[in-house]
Image (cartoon, rainbow, N blue to C red; front, top):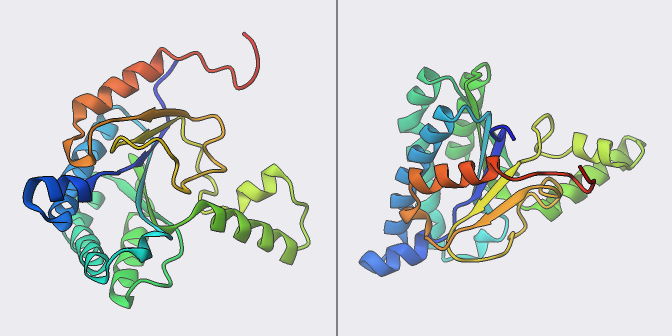
Length: 226
């Protein structure tokens, strides 16, 4: 078995970690950004081609306004600070989701970052923002209907946010929760899923590498027998 080409992560547990450490969910979100940088660097070292991070779901708008505002500002700051590193390290940024609900300033930064990194080839970092898998699938089917195209697996995949991106071989979910939370439901049909007890801010490069090593030993038959 070879190394995975695509790893997806549900980064769960930031808020709970922040409450536990400093009675602040936002403190946990800030700490989680540091882990993102570590895992991105580890993915590059492992020569993984795609890393997809579930960053903000369509359901996250139900959270308190102050927390949503903090998360948006945190993302803006991350893009501003890290854009130079993304370019320098040849990391391509791709946004998965509907950006319409976000502030104009954030949308401009994200679109600019996508454009400036579009030719980078070392790794593609997919950030899922205002992303919901059910909505994604419905939008794809509506698009096919509007274009009078056949509704089949190939065509549905062609109009998903992940067009041109291979399905993840690995999904990691931290935070001691065993659910998919409306994330990549179409794309995860044959993905190896690893549920991790640790909250996201406690997730380490060692934990990540252990999962990759475990995956290499897995025999994947995709429904067949070998």
